[in-house]
Length: 249
Image (cartoon, rainbow, N blue to C red):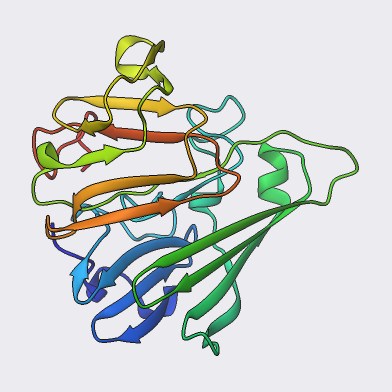
């Protein structure tokens, strides 16, 4: 799976964080979607060759932000509106004394969002690129007169040369919702989950550290460290690198 090519989108629509030595990240203002993260020249994220950068549709791949609803939504588009709205660049990429490069983005309610979801809010998204890691921080600020409920997640797509050899460690003994089996709630009994079949699962109350093996060029692993994101989801069809149940990819 190749990384993002700059000619796929207008340069004025993206923000690049560059550490040098082939380590860089690209954030598209449409959805504040991280569309590329390269580590020493190797792309870690998957973005479909069929991705459409028209600033209207959700970008197919990378790290889309889901808010205020995960999954089907009776009030609006699936996975909410955050991934299909243009975000504002609040702080341009800057390097601090620790060596990481950080950019800050924001999204606030407006007439269009209130037509769908009548709440006043502000999202602040901080993207920090380190020498060997990518740190993402999302703050949800309630500006409404009353409390509101929401779901949010970072819907990450990792690239891999062979998804059937990719595995996830850290899910043993967790309950999960299996959407392939009509939402059945099951328990994971494997210490290492190998992605060798059609998966669409949400693992509940997952530990704050999860390991994903054989991503990027197939020789790398990603250690996911999370805070205040209780669940972990994985969805994949191992038929091929460009396959999808609805044919989009």
